[in-house]
Amino acid sequence: MGSLFYTTLGNVQGPVTNSGPFTNIQSSIYWTSTYYQGNPLNTALYGFHWGSGIQNQFGGPGFGSQFAWAVLDGDIALIPEPSTALLLGLGLTGLAAQGRRRS
Figure 1 (cartoon, rainbow, N blue to C red):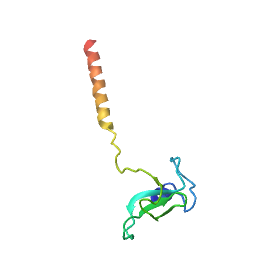
Figure 2 (cartoon, one colour):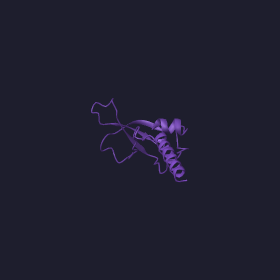
Figure 3 (tube, helix red, strand yellow):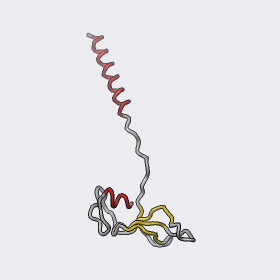
């Protein structure tokens, strides 16, 4: 989330000045799925605070209700442009051949 906040959206540490295409971003902590390795009980999670741009370890389960941002990496399907164009071309060729045969 830090890369999105600072690099992509161009914000600086402090209040959000650019939220880009995103709406309803809360000025609060958003959990990540990364555990803080410095905690011997391994119960603290990293979080990103959208109100200040700070990423830090926050308490673990039971710390309170915070926000989450669901992000999926690489689930975007490829657009089958070449096969679509090929089918369109074959269809138009077939129609042209059908029209010539009837004339």
